[in-house]
Length: 107
Image 1 (spheres, rainbow, N blue to C red):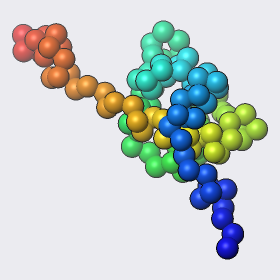
Image 2 (image 1 turned 120 degrees about the vertical axis):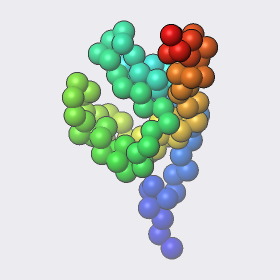
Image 3 (image 1 turned 180 degrees about the horizontal axis):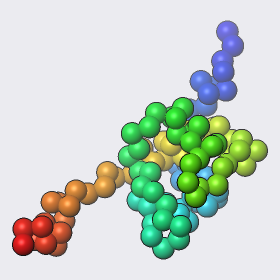
């Protein structure tokens, strides 16, 4: 019975964190995938609603300022690991869950 590379590779959030740092994803998306205004304004990618296939396709051929990351730079298994890492990140807090923002909204 033959296994595909994707099926044989169990995505690892731990390895994904290493790849996220190694490939510089954190520079635009922050270490938690919450995005950043300090650099080019990377988007929030934690708790993505994209399935792995769409995430991979976007990384390979992104829109906007993000550079493309070919399979020579980031392998499919590394992207699966990065995706697994991002899935473990806490969901962004809602404004009503942050006291200062909640208070600002009520005025």
